[in-house]
Structure formats: structure tokens, C-alpha cells
Length: 286
Image (cartoon, rainbow, N blue to C red; front, top):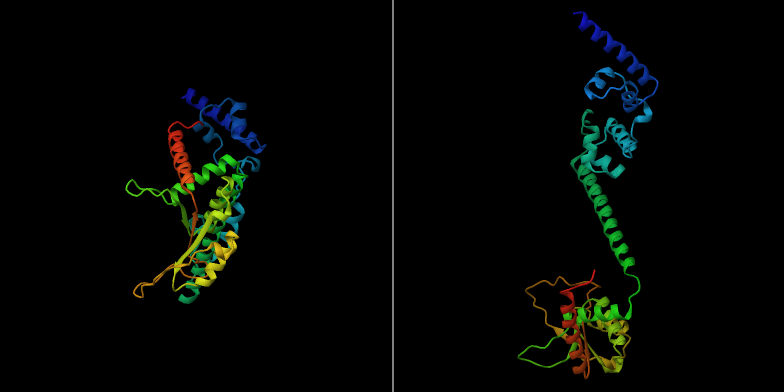
């Protein structure tokens, strides 16, 4: 019994020292090292009930948001309202305020629907901002293309979107069709790089007959900087009245066909370059 009492007295003495050090502002690690207490369970018992000093608490970037969310919840705000006000997720709000009493419903179904729509609009806006930021960073990372880089891009572009020979139909024509004005601009820049004179180009607009045909013709002519004499007669696609076209609106301008006259030699160069790219891709250098 005397031995047990001695151990208890030792513990009390050690606890007094630990508490005194804690109140003096020392951290758990400092107290552990000072008193040579390596057992966490014993250290927990020694410091039981003693709060840590303020300087040991890690700052939390969301503390201010959490405090504001709790304040708004106590004022009777709903999750939707808090989300719109603070721009944080409902899951975070739920964690922060779930111990607080649920506010009494004070809005009509129409008001609740309007709040939900605003919350969803805010979410979509944030998503779009993130999407646009990612695109802009990728765009800036490209920088200026070297002639070799533009050449390789053009070969891949043509082989993906341009006309190609078939074993049963050898024509060796260079013909590129696309509705994306950016694709057309890159293709023309590539032809300039290869020394193809603009006089050798012929253009054809392909568009639905129910669209703004004249507007599309003006748009493509301005884009490529070509005289109307370089344009063939526009190809009109008949509209099936039983179906509803989805490609409508001011942004729909059909497709532009770019054909290179006397392009057999160019076609052979394109095909050969493409298979050179394929062969090199089997053993890339990184």
C-alpha cells in the first residue's frame, strides 16, 4: 500500500508540474520534453481539463465563413440563403450549423424555388469561371508556334478533317471542309507556310436552305479575305420539315469548303508527312 501511495503522490506532483507548464503557455510537446513523459495516455491524464494555449491552435481559413454561417443560421436563414450569401457548399454549411435549431419556415414555395434558382445560378457561374480560367491558362501556355510546329499541326488537321484518297478512288485532291472558323484560319495559315498561292484556292459555302444564306456567304468571304470570284455557287442542303434543326441562330453559318487547284503533289506530301508522324509516334523522345 505504501508503494501505491508513493506512486499516486508522484503522479500528483508530476500533474502539478504539467498543469503549471500548460498554464504558462507551453505546448504538449514542450511539456512532454520538459517532464520526460513519452506516453501519450499519461500526458493526456496529466493535462486533463487544461485547454491548450491560443498560440498552438492552427488557423483555419474557413473559421470566418463558419462563424458567419452560424450567425446567419441563428437569424433564421436557410441553407439555400446562406449558400447564396457566402458562396460555400451546402455540405460545409450543414457541418457548421447542424447543432443549431432548425429555423421556422417563413417563405412560400415560390420564394423557396426562387432561392434555389439563385443558388443554382451561382453554382453555374462559379463552374463557368473555373472552366474559362482553365481554358485561358492552356491558351497562354501554347505561345508562338514555330514553322515546324505549324507544319505538323496542319498535317494532323488535314488528315483528320480533309478529303483523303480511297484505294478504289484515287483522286489526290486537297479539299478541306469545316464549320469552325478557327480551323479554317489555321488551315489557311498552313497553306501559306507551304507556299500555296491564294489564287489556287476555291471556296464553297455549304448551308441549310432555311438559314441565313447571304449572311453566311458574307461571313466566310470576310474571314478568308477572298473576292467573290473565288467562291463557287453555294451548296444548299434541303430542310426536312418533319425534323427540327438544332444548328440555328446567328452563330450558324454552315460549312466552308476549301479546295486547292492542281493539288496532287501537295496531297502526296501531306499523306507522306502524316505517315512520317505515325512512324515517329511509335518511338517518341520525351
